[in-house]
Length: 554
Ligand code: CFM
Image 1 (cartoon, rainbow, N blue to C red):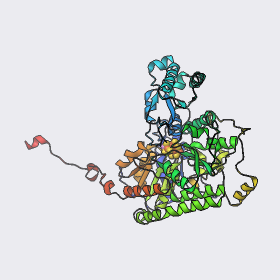
Image 2: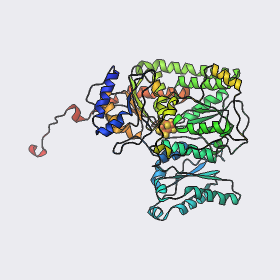
Image 3: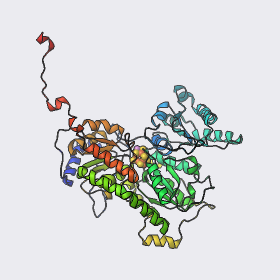
Image 4: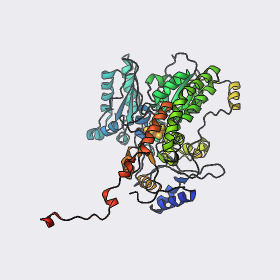
């Protein structure tokens, strides 16, 4: 329980002492390993310290991480509405990866299918584990086709599928062939995303990127003309974020050709190669497909972020600068000018109550970085942050990519060999245009990472666990802690408000301009609520309770 005093004016020495003290609890070998993932963000020669990331969690530690299947089925493919996503496995995997992330979608008209309200699973039982589940899978595919006649069916392998050796890819090929021979236009493909495949859900992202790229991207060449055509990658429409971003871009005159994968459809993936620019929101989950599209089709990519007003403005300006048309640049400025008065008004009021407060953010592989923008705008400081499963480049920036050690776990995930497509590769910019952009300081393929963006007197911790989370909250007492459902109630019981930044609890959207105002208001409400002061249990206030036995009074 929160007994110690709140730490104020924290210095790097305090943080180093705290680190040492927390790590003392571990056996020496574990402490040595954790020490490489638990960093005081002290830059030397302008470089952040090297952090260890994307390595196995030590057994016995209660991690915040999820599994490879969750990263593939839940994260990347979950938000696409018109693919029938069948989980081949026991029912729990399908059920618990079903919409708890609050990814939303908006079907366009009656013939636009939305299968997201369904949880499709082969519901493997003991019998299937002993005798094999391939027949059951084939029957499930055929049943799904008969019932829904979808454009595509995707199959996701869970742990037992890999253990017993069911070949989901050959079942997918057979089913596709059989239906295609009957004249049915359907695509069927599988993902070997067994939960244990990698050290976290990150491996599942990579597997999903590979298979969507191999089986879908580039299948549809009939794409309507538009002047400023982009793909939005790594945005998953949690709490309606994509709707806000779509609205802003539309008002600027920018066409979204495909999104990976918030509010997306199968056809969008199929025509993704027709865009003139790939914009990456979540670098961790989707950089693979951007890299492959660049090699195969010549589409350059840039990092964007629509979380935070400043970040949104920078991202819009960057897209406009890429296309370089005066008309677009002016339209973008007009949209920004329209939005700013409401932002300034909200902040002028809210900052009076939030200025100087502190936050901790431990989320996934990109949000622990992006949401710091919103807190900064409210005058709040992020004093500790970290990812569950990101890699070193998400912490230290892509400039360390060449130094990252490839271990057996990362080698376990296939790296596709991609070459330029002889028919469809086309450079999007001439040499002259590239020179112009370079002279203007425009950066392609750049992500500077979380650490250089945080002040020095802060903590950056990879794969935070329950013990460390509890200790940080007890000792530093932030004004708000942001993570997921597994952390929520433990933190709140310590009297600290906790905001879920995966599902947004029941809130959102938080992207773009109007989303930022939603966020400011919600955080203001949370950090200034008096309810947290009432969280002390009676025995904490009054440790020596006295009472009498009932029979004494009789
Ligand atoms: Fe990317 Fe995500 Fe995230 Fe992620 Fe996720 Fe998510 Fe996340 Mo939860 S794709 S890495 S695997 S931004 S589901 S929408 S919130 S952990 S920080």
